[in-house]
Image (cartoon, rainbow, N blue to C red; front, top):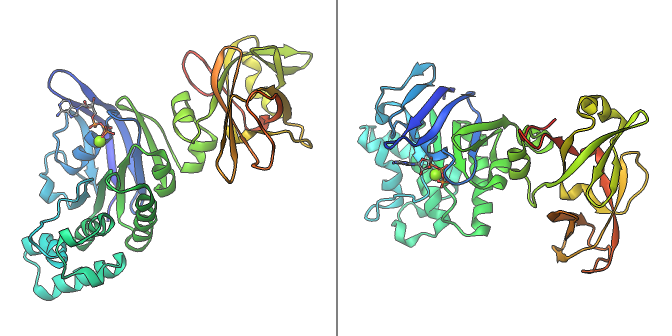
Length: 366
Ligand SMILES: Nc1ncnc2c1ncn2[C@@H]1O[C@H](COP(=O)(O)OP(=O)(O)OP(=O)(O)O)[C@@H](O)[C@H]1O
Ligand SMILES: [Mg+2]
């Protein structure tokens, strides 16, 4: 087990493409860290540099206190699990899992002990004599994980290990991976483009965008205190609503003037934070779950009259899509018992205790 330190890490591919632009990241021993971000943001490149499968163009990676920049992959004591499980078709499950140990000349007894232990953790003890073609996708994924576990490496590296599975199995295997980590506690770096997978698995989530790290933090912190527009919009589904607004000073209080002459009072406890921005254009951000059916009883509640365009009943909630003057694709989450029809105006409550204000130019959350 080990910590992983990444300092000013750069990857420049031939032709001058900077895939990773000088990132810093400290991963603690036993920690489960997820790199998440859109396609092409540099997640796999970063992971492959940790693994040693990709040369680094600048900076430093250390594993367990040792700089590994010039250490070949096989000597880094890491185990990697990919999207395609790369099992050997002619070998049984047992032999597939035993393979890395056989290569390293472990004794037969030790191999059997480790494979059986990993098989028990993954609940595949009854499959050890089968060949991969006689396994389901989820079972193959478990074998691939088993092959990583038997090594007892310093670090697990996962690159989109669940993306070949159907939606239901993904959710199941997600829980499985979390359970395994709670048992073996091996330091893990996990890459996905799926923000739900990132939020559910990670001790800390690393949001990447265009070769840089936008923000690092525990899932709840990224959700409730995003630092940038990118993170605010990327984490959470349906995504946060962003509405252009002007922050106005009005007799000792601050108001937000939205398009269509909607005026929302900034909660008193937030005012000190925003006073310096009075008179400026801002971006008002609010998550769909903080735009709900009309409610009363809190000082931070404010009314908002809208006309639904599209209604999506989800069972546990109803999503209402609408627009305001100049801003499209807004979404509110209503209790499913609340009547809502396309074209029929309704009054919503915005819980301004949960609002965000952003600088429209820099994208920073104020
Ligand atoms: N061998 C290569 N040569 C040149 N450019 C590359 C190479 N591999 C990756 N890139 C570029 O580097 C950038 C980052 O790629 P990377 O594979 O790390 O993205 P990713 O975040 O893993 O995306 P995805 O979610 O699609 O897997 C992309 O712009 C990609 O086109
Ligand atoms: Mg990738």
